[in-house]
Length: 449
Ligand code: PHE
Image (cartoon, rainbow, N blue to C red; front, side, top):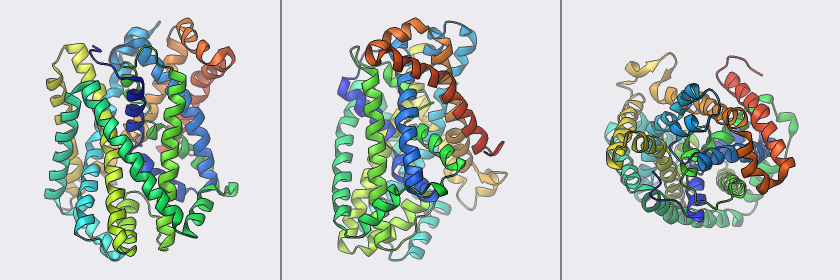
C-alpha cells in the first residue's frame, strides 16, 4: 500500500501536526487554570515526556513492523489470539467521531478569523452574546464553515501521504511556529503580566494537587499526542525505513509539550494583563480572549488574527490525521480507490458533524439531547474520554503482551539499550494499562479516586 512514504523530516512534521491541535492551545491552558497552575504543569510534563514517549514508541513500533493499515496490523502482528485482535482495529473509527465535532470547532475559528477583520467585541458580555448566538442560533454560518473544512481536509487526504499530508504540514507547521513565536515575543514584552503568567504556570503548589489532577494530566497527554486512535500507528507505516523511532518519539513529545507551554504563557499573559478570567473550555478562546484582544486597541485585531490563524492551522493538520487511518484501511483492505475511501469517511464525519452542531441550536437541541448532554458533548465525552484511553490500553497491551518479544527487542535494544528496553516493557505491560484504567473509571464517574 505504501506507494508513497514520508521523508524523515516530513514524518516528524506530520506527527507533530497531528499532535499540536486545539488540545494544546485551549484545553491545556484551561485545565492548567482549573487544576491550580504549576503543580499540574509539572505532573503534565512528567506524563507527556514519560508516558507519552513510551506509548509513542509502542505505536511507532506497530506501524514500523506492521507496514499496513491500523486494523490489519493488529491482526498480522499478533502472535496469539489473532482472531480477537482483529477487532482492536475498531479504534480507527474513533478519530472520525472526533473529527465530526472538531471540524465544527475549526469552523468557529474560521468565523473568528473573519471577525478579527470586522471588529472585536468590546466587552465580555458582548463577546459572550456573539459566541452564544453563533453556537445556539446560527446554523447557516456553522454549516458553511463545517463544509469548508470538509472540502479542505478531503482534498488534502485525496493527494495521499507525500503530496497531501506531508506537503500541507510542511507549509502550515513552520507558519504556525512563526506565528506562535511572534505572539510569544509580544507577550514577553508585556511587563509584569508575562512574569505573572510564568509564576502561575511554574510555581508548584502541591497542596492544590489532587489525584484528579494527575488523572486529568494523563488523559490530556494521550489526547494531545493523538495516541490510542490508530493515527500514529497509521502514519508510522509510512515511515522511511531508516527512521529512529525512539528519537522521533522524544522529539514529537518535546515539540508538542513546548507548544502547549508557549500557548499557555501567551494566553495567560494576555488574560492577566487585562484582568480577565480564565474560563472553561470553548469560553476561553471564543469569549474571554476576543474581548481581551479588543482591549489591546489597534494591535489587538492583529493579535486576534494571528492567534486564530495559528489555531486554525493547528486544527487543520490534526483534522487531516483523523481521516487517514480509516481511509488507509479502506484502500488497503478493500482495494478502494483513494477517492472512494476518502469520500465515504468524509461524508460520515460531515453528516455526524451536522447533527452535532444542530444539537447546540436551541430549536433542535431538545431532539438531540440524551440525559443531560447534547449530541455534541456526548461525542466528545465518549470519544476523547472513554474511547481514546481504551485505544491506548489496546495499543500498549498489544505491544507488551501479544507481539513477538524478540522482534521488539531487535528494534529497541540497539536504539536505547537493554536496560531501558526492560523499563519500557514494564511500563507498557503493566503501569500504563493500569493508569489508563484508572483514567477511564475516574472520568466516567464509575469510581472516583
Ligand atoms: N492531538 C490533537 C490536539 O491536541 C487532537 C487530536 C485528537 C488529534 C484526535 C488527532 C486525533 O488537539
